[in-house]
Image (tube, rainbow, N blue to C red):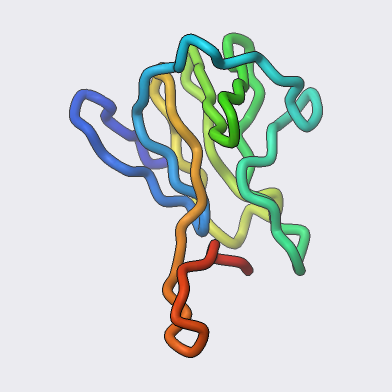
Length: 116
């Protein structure tokens, strides 16, 4: 597993999922994780190879409007359900905002969320 240093601002890319250090908004509410083992942070629309964060003790998921956050007090990992697709990345204890990568469709002349 590759270790991530959160001492400086950076974006962590894991497939179409993006995570970056952030402050948890005051209006954020805790949400129930996908299951006891992990929380899906980027759905796989076709292959079922979701990008997930492991729900180790000390890991909590929040929403604020349409934004999602994870706060972990112990190291955890962002990984794929099918382990051979992307290497797992260790997340140091911190608060991260979770987003999806976007791409520009030159034919439609608009931005869209990256899909697998």
